[in-house]
Length: 388
Image 1 (cartoon, rainbow, N blue to C red):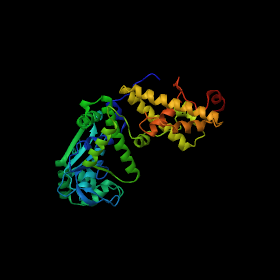
Image 2 (image 1 turned 60 degrees about the vertical axis):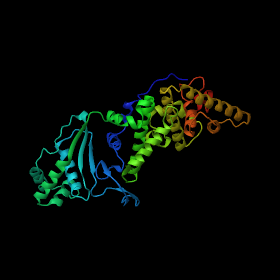
Image 3 (image 1 turned 120 degrees about the vertical axis):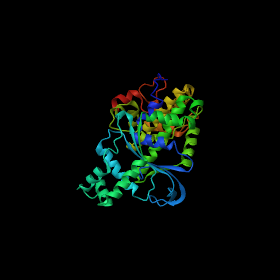
Image 4 (image 1 turned 90 degrees about the vertical axis):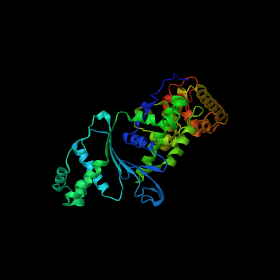
């Protein structure tokens, strides 16, 4: 068993997720019954009340959509220094939204306090801004040109829209978005009643899930939309998979957020990579197997942090004994080759592993350099040095 080096669990682990994703989660945690939140539909984030049986223009299905009299909040997220140019672009976008069929009740500019931004959204008067729009000669597709075509010479209508947005506007500068997410999750993820590592594992699992869903929808040119009921179902699912008794993060989500980079020297020079090369796996299978190892390593840290050292020992000792049994059988049958060792060890049961990926991952993990008394070799060391 290797010496335990604790990782940076807790709220600091959330900082690896994009600021926009965390703002989305921050507002998602405030959903009430009958509400939904959208990622990059009207704006970066959109929170609205919902009504069933409206046709979804994105995929041809029926979903919940906003009704004319319901509240609708749009949020523009900026994790950068906010300049006059920034606010003009945001305000022009909002003017187009205000003049659309969307019934907007709140406009929010959300920023990170680390950039020390101040609210300068309406530093320019409606008169100055209208003059700037009228004098613009940018291409037709530019936002300012669309605003110019929308209002033409009608300053009164421009001023009305300007003032309407100003009345609904809010500037938010978050001191620490991770702490705010933590505070809002405290009740739904039972912070007071469980181990802190389990609690933060649930938060991390939530952010991983939302990140994957957003990425998948962006790749399919679709927005990501989640309603209150689906959100609560997600909370229950995460709580059931990650508890004081069990820690079973979704492998599919983990894999998408932790791709294997073969150009990384740490991978190319690692013993587990060289051992897999000896099995003559193709690149896809190499990636899969290295991914199993990373997944198990992450889970192994979680077990250590919750003092489940016995679970780790049982998983790894069983994996090693499976390997020794397979190796002996292959030698008796004159079939002792690296791939056969790998394939045979993976196939044997390990009741201490919660899923196949944990079972496979423990096989890869035990081929690492730092493993001593239970180290696995798909190809024995004496041959490995001269041929790999």
